[in-house]
Image (cartoon, rainbow, N blue to C red; front, side, top):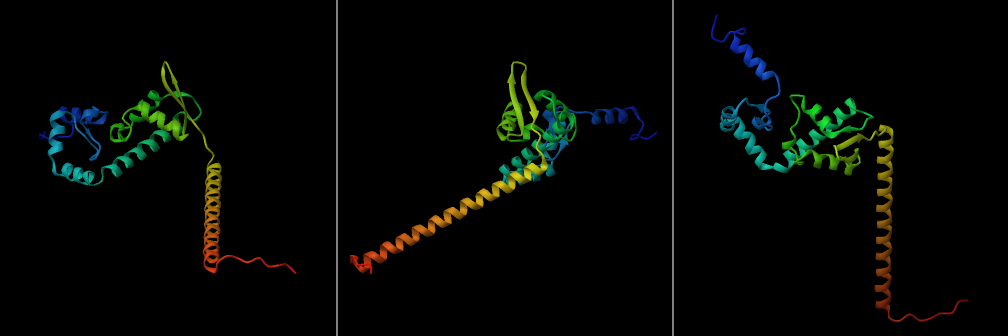
Length: 196
């Protein structure tokens, strides 16, 4: 048997260790690399590929964090939609189910520092009904019909177009009044005439 054989106890143990979730502490979201211990993480941080990723991140950190935030939010809501579409459920339960997927986006790479902040954001955006109870935060997904969403978008566009048209009309009236005022000032005082 060779040193790097597939069925050696060491190779089997390594595969078992690599299969499950590892400590979040040693996960690099930029490189999407999980390290098993502090030493492995330190070695990863010194690698060229990690340094290149950090340079890319340094050029526009806001965009990278915003991208991770959008991915996290959509993944979390998709999971909520599939697992608990109509039920009121603890936010912790949904989050723990969501992070069971090994390839999820980690919350510490998003703009939200805690689950509480994220849940409050979902409530403020109208994506979930949020309740703060002594047992923790509970969320219920707000179901929206896709056709209803399209109607809402059309209505919003129509209102915006009407508002812009009203502003343009008002601007034209102001310009016309200003021109009339300038014309009246240039011609001098207006003389009254009789109607026949």
